[in-house]
Image (cartoon, rainbow, N blue to C red; front, side, top):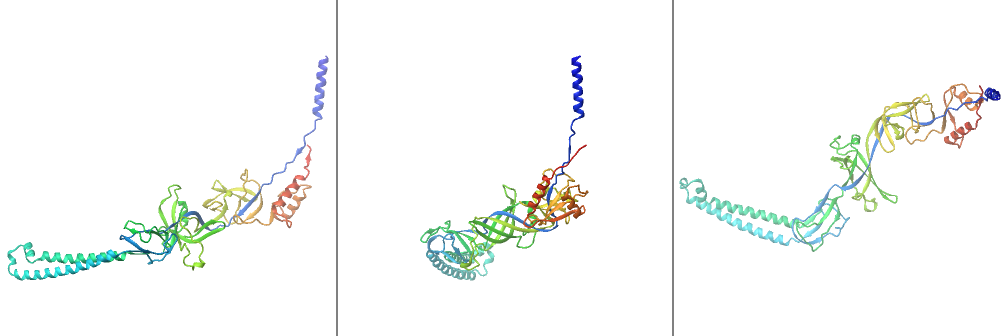
Length: 452
């Protein structure tokens, strides 16, 4: 009986505790506010600039060798590495006295050949008189020998040969004077005065100074934006280019040029197209010596900016605004919306896209877990990548009636009438500071509990 009473008492106590249990207060959770920055789309013709690194190289490089052998009599003093020579300027003289003797010998041979030819002409005439009326009994070859035609032709050929040898001897003498074939920069000159040279000897290496090439590679897909002579334009000059050589310590060498040609093969490593950019007057020689800038040196690694054709009806966006390179987030009526786009151009910082309309609000803020229809608040607008946001904070007012005690929401709703409004910032307070203070005030507000 005692155990039964204990059980009954325990049950009654449990029922009493259950009946008098405290009710859990219902906590009203605040809906999180997602703040985003947007870029207003304004489709237009955006300029294209293709940037690539390239190497400076010579358009014409000549290894100068003598056409005759002999001893070097004289060489110019400016024939040193880095020296400049003008077209037609005498560079080296080779001793040609032996070739001058050959000229005298050939003149004597010509005189002798003329005498022999005159003698054979007389003999030919005598033979013709002697055989007059008797040649019909001879065959054709015998008639030629009887009239001394072979002997006459041989004497005539000897005269022509002597004249030809005289011309060669005269050319050999002229070849002893070696001139610059074009305005050139001397790379090296191993020849010295007194040195005996042959036709295989290396005298010097010259490169033309009228223009250099910059050899660079670009993706094949980007060639369509460039004007390339003989490929997609009939003009002799292709797309303009700016060449910059960063020499360090704040020193840079700048030149302008143009696309000259597209090579016929792709780069073996990157499989990219190879372009040659022509740089006129790379040494700045058209200016007086005291006014020239630093020269563009061969072998330099330079940065080249090619100004291509503009991309029509495109919008410039930061790369972080893209979704899988096919879509972007737009803000419409305070909500997120996916929108397809077409990427026309891209570089390291931005992309050019088509498919956006005038005034579209493209989200540029990276979002952790965005969803279609998510409610967002626009905090800043820009016209293009890198533009400074407006000096105003933007908030989205609640379309419902303000709650009792929520003075901030009431003020915003009364002023906006349930629409998005712009609130001027206090002087000296940035938009980020104002937004931070607003969130802090909301966290300090007491939460109201409702009992069931």
